[in-house]
Image (cartoon, rainbow, N blue to C red):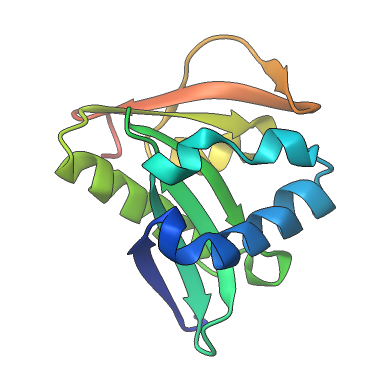
Length: 146
């Protein structure tokens, strides 16, 4: 497994590195309009940043003040190497430490299986967000695969 490190950070300290990953994945790769990618939640969220051994940013996620996990992204060269799993596990630990019993997220439908393996279940119907199909998912303490 490739070596990488996870950091808990905030937007004020790491906006440049966090936005580099999100721009590469969401805006450049997936075509999300830039105006939809950046929002006021960034300043008020806990951010998780995955960095390679050379300190280059390779993945990120954020935990909103209401317990939602979002903006999970891993650069293409690092996919399938445990970065996403590590980011999700860290986000879940952070949510638990903050007292959230239920954690929610909006998953791109192609990634729903990834979150299901971590114990998330789909709640509701598929919908479109930023031109991409999504499903709402949640995980509650006590659910299977905790």
